[in-house]
Structure formats: C-alpha cells, structure tokens
Image (cartoon, rainbow over all chains, first blue to last red; front, side, top):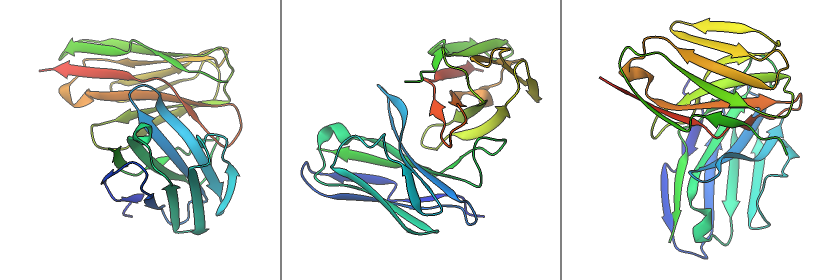
Length: 115
Length: 110
C-alpha cells in the first residue's frame, strides 16, 4: 500500500491567490482528516469526513477554508483567498476506524508558504 | 476545550540515557495514542492505550495510561539517536477525533 498521498509537497503562493491541497487516503479507510501544524499551535484538526460526508468542520478557521471529498479516494482542502497567516504544514490522515486501537495514518504533508 | 500539555517541551540527552515524557490534561479520555514525527514527515502511530492504569511496551519504549485516564507517560530506556523526533500524544473522549498535545522534541546525541 502506498499510504496516504498528498500533493503538492511544497506550495509557495502570493497572498490573495487560491490554493488547493490534495489527498488520496488509503483504500478502505472510511475516515479522512485534515490537520494543520504550526510551531505556535501544534497540530490542529480542521475537518474530518466519514464515508465522504463531512462530520465535524468546527476547526476550519474561517470561510476562506473549504474541504470536499467527492469520492472515497480523493479529498481537497481549498483556501481562497490565501493569507500569510495560513502558512503551515497541512496534513491529511485516514483511518479505518477511530476510537479504538486503530490510529491515523498520516501523509507526508504539504508545506504551504503564503508570501 | 480539551487541552493536552506535554512536558518537557524540549529534551536533549546522550545516547544510553533514560528519559520520561509526560502528557497531562484536566479532561478524561477514552483512549490515548502516542505518535513520533520525524522532520518532513507525518506523525507515525506508536501505541494506543484505552484502560486506566494500562502499561504497554514497545521494545525500549514503555507507555502508561494514568488510572484516571487524564494523563500518560512515555519512558524510553537506553535512548538511541534513532529515537530522535517529535513525540506527540493524542486523546479522544469517545468522539471520532483525536486532539493532539503540544509535543516533546527529543534529540539523542551519539
């Protein structure tokens, strides 16, 4: 299994531009999570999906952020318009089940820099 | 809001030394996990504990869940340079999401 695949690995964009981050979860995993990691705030949960349906988006910072999961093998996190404070590493993770012995499998992340 | 505080925040030790890192909260968790993250990669799951007082061992790593399920510790025996990384605890209160701790950045010097 190739694991959770995220693209791009690095993204540099100018303030005000739209940014789209992509994630392919592990096949058969019903849960997908988007996290953001910064030195100041650590790992923050943004949103998670179960069977392609958004369950909890209370961590999404504001309306500039949106996430979709059109099918079981693909999800996107979009920021429009982007701002310098959005600079962070964004992780996607998937899990077959949560709350038990099953942990998350994380992707390698997308390092976003907004200048 | 659930908060998971980890201590120490940074730790630099010599190869062969023992160490313990802590994960504390005022909230009760139904399960708690420990992850290790290396630079440029995502966190990797080490262990999950679900029962108060539970102890799990993974080679030289010993994990303990507090009796009240509000805290946890990770003890490493005879640390090696390969143990270097960011150690994260994550707790779930029974919902389908885990809240991550502030992290302990460990460096083991050869």
